[in-house]
Amino acid sequence: MGLFGEWMRAAPADLKPLRGDLTAVRKFIADGEGPRSGTEGDWPGIDFLLRRRDFPVDIIYGEEPFAAPSAEDKEWDSDPPCYLTPAQVRTAAAALRDLTAEELIHGVTAAELRRAGLYHLYTPARLPELAARLAGMRDYFVRAAACGDAVICWLS
Image (cartoon, rainbow, N blue to C red; front, side, top):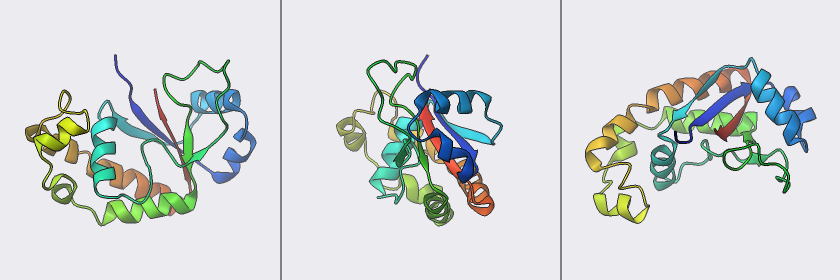
């Protein structure tokens, strides 16, 4: 089974005690009641498409680290979670609001996918399937922005 891209909304005050403590982050995510969403296994393709459009915020990996991983911290399947501040969530929401599915995939070629190391996962014919995720992503970030929430981002 592959990695899944995940998001969880949280009040900014809830994140303060987590800074510097990846064990607390892990527990917060496991116990968390904040609304969740994500990209499932399509995070590499979504990440590629957003970076290709110079998306202003990294909504796949997050922007702000909680802490640097220690040598003992092997609990994460990839890098530990990062988060987006409420301001970054607002920026992401505005950028997603202005982006159409057609714009997201416009002009992507098989050669680009090969250069990015994604051709084994995605072909140009499969890109509309990825672009269809845009509406759900937009809704999630617009709601988070409207509530003033931060968003925790991680791969699991």
